Image (cartoon, rainbow, N blue to C red; front, side, top):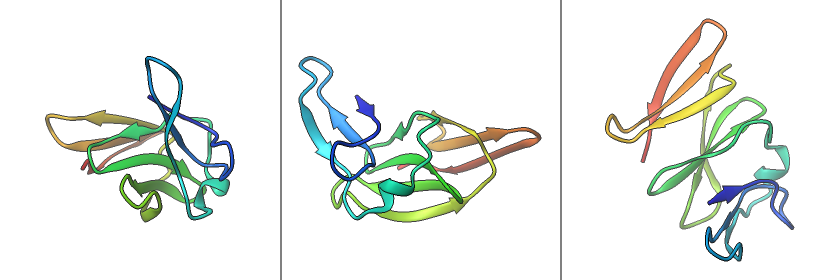
Length: 99
């Protein structure tokens, strides 16, 4: 389970669904600029979160932002079988790689 904001970095934190214990915490300072109005989307290698200029891709192993996809989307939905994250908002529908 993923939630925001993080206790120390201001970014994302991953917690165990069964016990609520912190399992993972975003690093690198990018999380302080995260737009926390929409829930994050989790893939196998990356977690995707809305940022000030688009969709942030956060590497689960390094815990840092590795890419930002420019989008005006306001809602993000994972489609695991198609391996994409859909960005929706107003007239926009875009797809970004889900890894």
